[in-house]
Amino acid sequence: MSRPVYLVDGARTPFLKARGKPGPFTPVDLAVQAGRPLLMRQPFAATAFDLVILGCVNVIQDEMNPARVAALRLGMGEHQVAFTVQINCGSGMQSIDTAFRYIRDGSHEMILAGGTEALSHAPLVYSRDATEWFGQMARAKGPIDKARALAEFRPDFFSPVIGLERGLTDPITSLNMGQTAEVLAHRFGIDRVTADTYAVESHKRLAAAQSEGRLKGEVLPVFDRDGEAHEHDDGVRPDSSVDKLAKLDPAFEKPYGKVTPGNSSQITDGASWVILASETAVEAHGLEPIAKIVDSQWAALDPGIMGLGPVLAATPLAQRHGLACDDIDLWEINEAFAAQVLACIAAWQDDDFCREVLGYDAAFGRIDRGHLNVDGGAISLGHPVGTSGNRIVLHLANALIHRGAKRGIATECIGGGLGGAMLLEAA
Image (cartoon, rainbow, N blue to C red):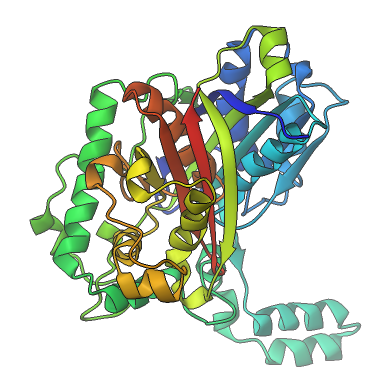
């Protein structure tokens, strides 16, 4: 049994740039702020869902299983089943994929699927030596034992590491995510000017989408405890230029690296939800779908080149449905790094790569930049890790409507050497 699955609505918060301190919202705060107005504009009660699934990577200690906490705060009822999923950058897409499969296979009718992340709340982590010293102090039973423990104290015990920094370093290769982008830049000959040019374009596209109202209804304002309204993605820099970005030093491979803070995704806080429904639920509630979820694909590869995940996930997805590169009207590729997106584009045009890695007879094809991330991406609006995969699917659905397009693929690279892709058609 395989039933059609529809994306009937969705909304997200503005993405708020982290600024060196915890932001005004926790992950659940963000999920609630995005979810409450979304649910209020539906013609059914908040208790009508069969399931809530929420992607979140950096779960904070006060919000274990944030999906359940968010569902309760959203008034979805004490009987609402809710669980959290985590697959690094793919978590927000994984929530949609799981919901898609439940509905497609007939066990559920309507699911709220989302992603949330507050990277500004990433914990500080003490070193192993420091934690062992704290344990030794706790075990000390008398003044002599305590004195011995105190004698082993070092000032650097009070120099914690930001947990996010360790979380963005691959435990197998010991490369951080930026270094994996440098590997791809070298492999596919992506130079600094090309990467910076791509980054500038991302900012200008997002600024245009904001000013022209293309994000209306998708991005909803949020209000912090001080009563301040946050209405727009605040990391956008409309005045960005290649000359300005050229002044930034490489972030990971000095002095000749291609990856800088200016052509990388921003560290941000944000949440996104989509509502998925079966044909039965659509008819029962009088809903108007905005897109149909056709299929999805996950892929795995060497963690050191994790940025090619979109190529290994999206290509077999298209191939399974008999689609050539030109058959895809719109693409959303999460912009982890400009060099990473550009490397994916280059890989799809590389005969040898497509033959040796993908099993094609020739190159998959050239993606028209006018059809890729048409309203900007993570370089300009940010990359809340557990949220981005959800956002790109939601925005792709809306972009298909705005541009009168038929078909699109949302895809992303995932830390650890994974990729995810989802094929949508306009409803």
